Amino acid sequence: MFRSRTTLLVSLLLAGLSTNSRASTMLMATLSNSQENPPTVPMTATGAARPASFGSAVFILNDAMTAMTFTAMITNIDFTGTQTPNDPNDNLMNAHIHAGPAVTPTSNGPVVWGFIGMPFNDNNPMDAVVTPFTTGVGGMVSGKWDAPEGNNTTLAAQLPDILAGRAYINFHTVQYTGGEIRGNMVVVPAAVPEPSSVVIAGTGTLSLIGLGIRRRRTTKQT
Image (cartoon, rainbow, N blue to C red; front, side):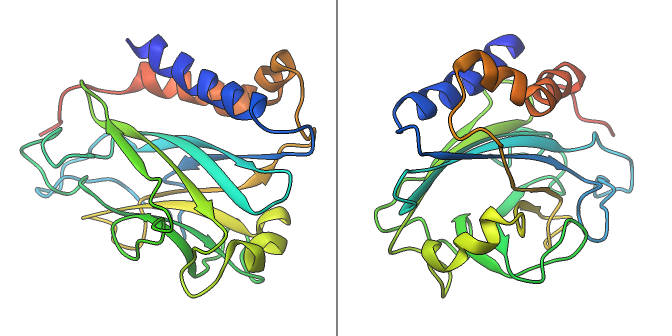
């Protein structure tokens, strides 16, 4: 089952590449507690340590750069409020893309597009699909930032920051309303490499997914 989740994300990545032209642009992000500003330390409501939360995401900008699709896999954040029924701290509240001219991997920026919770901007049309894990804690999310959408902005206006590495994806929980895990969005150098090259180029991200899934605890610490 864990292997199938990793395979699913790889398949979604390759499907996204195969349905876009050679001019499409791919970005990746590896999300962790340590990348938050300030870094986060997941705890239960009673003050006990809970498993570190983490994730990976892949983004595809179409050749015209008028839409950006994404898929993210997140572990140890409760997507339903029932995956860890005895503790609300890890419950997912919101998820967004943040960007801005002053954003760095260690500084914060405004929400430019929300796809879970508030603000919610994936609505013209609504493409967001949230799929909680059937066992364990976490889930997968996919969506598309269409040209008319944005949190008082547009994709076109944010492209310079996104392509320059001044953007990140952020997942917010009950414990950390300002963000529990985040990952800087980085352009993959090759526009659309061959499938074998995609796996090689994404080794860091995809290996982290596999490692994280193996590390994921299916029982709640108390």
